[in-house]
Image (cartoon, rainbow, N blue to C red; front, side, top):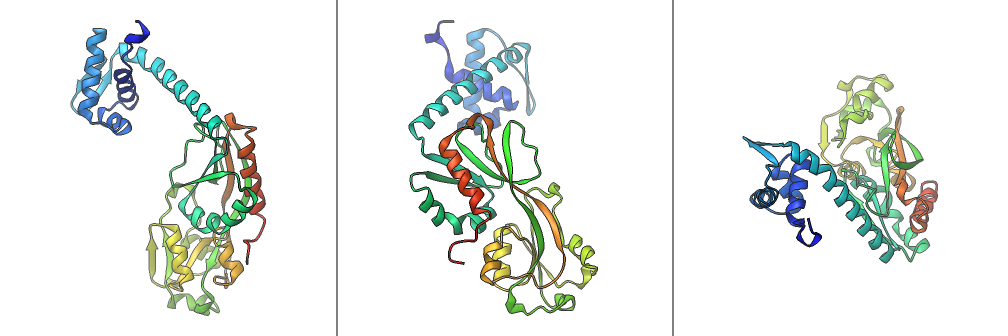
Length: 298
């Protein structure tokens, strides 16, 4: 088929629908309606004189022709994307995306951004704060990942081993385990509960106390809110000592007593295809140094 005759819109619609096995999900990806996806696929089928899907109730099944065409299109569109991304990076060589969780962004990163701008004044930094990990293969990006890995096709280095402890405001004047019954114990929902991070039950077991010895429960859907409530004296929380380091150094939070429990690792991750990127390495150097330095002004 002549290149001028290639039905690019129809091919893109088919590739998304075939990859997702769903017209609805393809429509969400391409920001159109499912009806538009269906119409473009039918146009492609009419052009080819072949059926590409078996349409069933709430399901589409790829035909043999579709299975042959899909990997060719996926490789092609991926190659287009990588080439265009590479050109964009050449035109914006000083822009870096840093991916991290919202709690890490608010608790650890924001208090240190003044130092970053002072040390790296020519770098445009974009903070991608989300619980969902960013695809690092498509742009000059770094990520602070919380876990043990491994991260295939990525370079990863450990910045810190984390630990958890019972943390409270000094205003609560907690002197010992008997005081816990009089204050709330604060918890939050982990985005990935399968990570196996410490819970209040784990802490009680390590401390040799009963879970029933704790006060009433206050639960947040967001880790940052749990930290803010602890600073405000609303109760005690089992928190990452890395994320509340600034508050501990300022004295607005402290660890009054009790065991420390091991957490996971904060790791600096980048995709291998961006190894040697100078701007990326500048940001990485700053992150390494910032993990071992106190926050300015504390």
